Amino acid sequence: MSERVRICLVGASGLTGSALIRASVGREDVRLVAVARRELDLPPGARMEVLLADPANWGDAIAAARPHTVVSALGTTWAKSGKDEVAFRAVDQELVLACARWSVEAGARQFISLSSVGADARARGLYLRVKGEVEDALVKVGIPRLDIVRPGLLRGKRAERRPLEALGQLVAPLVDPLLGGNLARYRSIRAEVLAEAILALAHEKARGRFIHEWPSLERALRRRAFQDSLREPLAVE
Image (cartoon, rainbow, N blue to C red):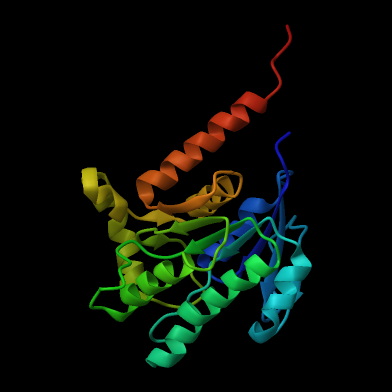
């Protein structure tokens, strides 16, 4: 049996965080603890702790989780932030970086941060520019292993309405097969698949900084599937 990894999840109520909780149900190789502002609606069969705290006190909550790995699925939208850059950065930048620093203080060996394909500190658009700035800042935090996950369009059911994104989710399955070579990183990904890829990354040991776009996420899933196959008991006739 593989090592049981203790994962602390921040950003548990969003699309990716919710998918990660569902993906962890029934798994013996993962012990998931969520840190949240408010109570979460947990899926059937979920056996996990949810530590409730104001974001200002999440450092104490992360320490209490005693994590091997901290996963940040934090993120807001321009609309939800009231179209205010300060409010947007408070979540997508300041809170993410604070959680990374708290992870180091808690002794975590790994920080997995949800970013976006196209993230670049020199980007003209605020969203991708902030994501890029956060990626650059995370490198300086000092976590032993940093995994930056850059998905394309996330496919799945969200709690809030996003008309343009909903349209993109309808079109994406038709466009994805056409995106090959360097364009493959722009392929959409279902939240459930992304969650499985994150869990796969949580079991990897190498230190350093790793950036994962679609091809890399697919390879992580394949590595984990191969490792699991080696652990399966041989059939005896």
